[in-house]
Image (cartoon, rainbow, N blue to C red; front, side, top):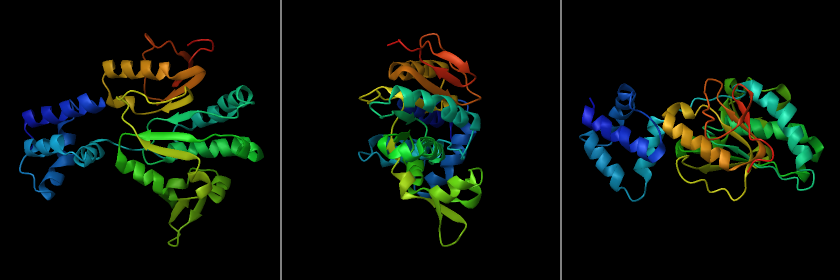
Length: 273
């Protein structure tokens, strides 16, 4: 069983490096790490953390993050957001970008890929025959390399793709030999760029974002970290751009004056820097 001192060390490491607040999740930390430590020969959590902090390859740290972050997601989760994206956001972008035809969409908590692939399908569907003359690629990032590898593989069970429209299933997925799993087509895969990224790091974007999906990730942060993250998001967003957060999440707008469009959908005022 993890000691209080060992738990504080691990929780402090995750908080300082990734903003993840595990301070009230001692049972979860112990439950997810206990067998891992035993199977890999570490005699104590301190010995394990010594190895994590001195591992020059960074692999142990990545494994720690993979073990302690929850990546629960599914296709068409919080479907109202995708409806709004198609009916309101994309028409605005189509008019705004009619000359450049270049969109900047970021999914900041990509998990195992369902969300960015859904956004890509919406873009393909909306632009139709015009799609080839538009750059609608989705940047999809996550702190966990494990789920990003799953996302890049793009293989899902039959029940996982069940919520999708039938025409999307036929167009964007191909059945594997066992008939119970389906692979994302290359046509769709090339619309999503997966990258590992820690939201606590400086944002490296060379251009401002027009649409940001940052859903169901701020629940892992304390109020100070959330406030700092929202300010960073506001600063890298193009005027008029839209921010989508999880429907159970809240947004402190005290230093990032987003307009509330409807619960969990916000917009940076046009004309703002």
